[in-house]
Image (cartoon, rainbow, N blue to C red; front, side, top):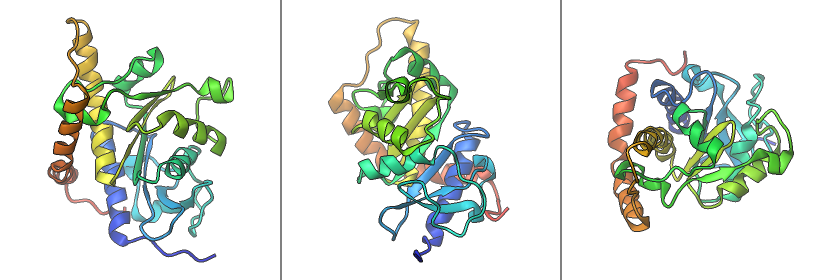
Length: 241
């Protein structure tokens, strides 16, 4: 079945998203970002199996929510494309997903401690991150979300949160736009660093629910400022190379 090609601008933004996440040390050779297809219901865009900092226009592939490739793409897919498909299936409000293994987040994932907003830039964390324990869904595994079944379990743990921590693995954040999801992935890591630093100093006064929501709403209007800066940091780059 023929599908409509995604908008060229959306492809470019996804390439930029991957490279920004690498430049900001959220991903390294591993991790991935996706966005819903702009004109094909039940489909999303994700790179083929490539390091985020090396993603090019031709790597962007269309998948259905079951993880099947819909594009004319011969490169192998990411093993964990099911993270993205099942979250899009479960959350119609989600337009973009970022999965990473950013280092400061890992201690929270392995201790079942929530990431909670310590400052206004991380208001999107609301009353705290969600937690995913893969053993509850799949027993002993290699920790990867390599099936629709595990992807569905992850999406269930995410619930209506913006961030889910994955024990022994990393985290996944979602957004209502690609730019917002990238912002959240970056500031989830920043918040984790600050929260870890504050733990040894005494009791932390987190943002309350209302403060977090007000801060999140305010920051959403400022995301283009950061996005444009992050792109400028990349310098003159060829998205085809």
